[in-house]
Length: 153
Ligand code: THU
Image (tube, rainbow, N blue to C red; front, side, top):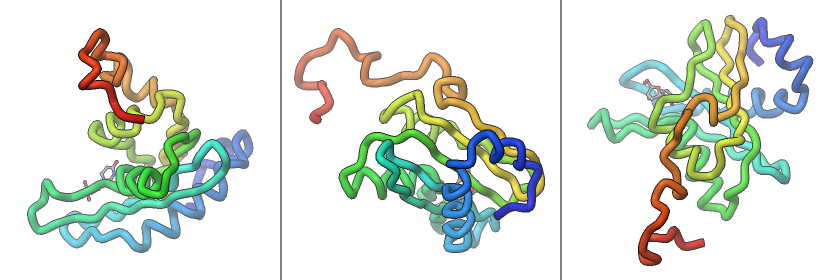
């Protein structure tokens, strides 16, 4: 658990504590030899399952996947698509915001997702994804469209 000033957030949202713990544990398994910046994420389904993800870097740098997208891919791969919270933990002193690519990918599954960023020393913050990605491009942005382009359930 980060010894942090996130006590206030945790007081308000004790339900996030297991997610922070899971993200911290996952972060130790990050594969980040190039950046030296391990990241852990924990994504919670509406019915309470927790999926973790880490950043997995690659010698071809852009191939790297972030922790948030790793967690999302794991969850969807196992059949979950409904999420209510994600917590991201880094080694940075302050909380680090999810990158734009991750915001976009998370948005596919709902803009009401609560996003919490936790640094090792700094205060944590929590914002709804819709505030982190205003005027998002989503499936609804296609309308009207040919049926052929409708996402399959
Ligand atoms: N990274 C994440 O895993 N999540 C983020 O939201 C920001 C960045 C990773 C990607 C890369 O492996 C390292 O952090 C440095 O950018």
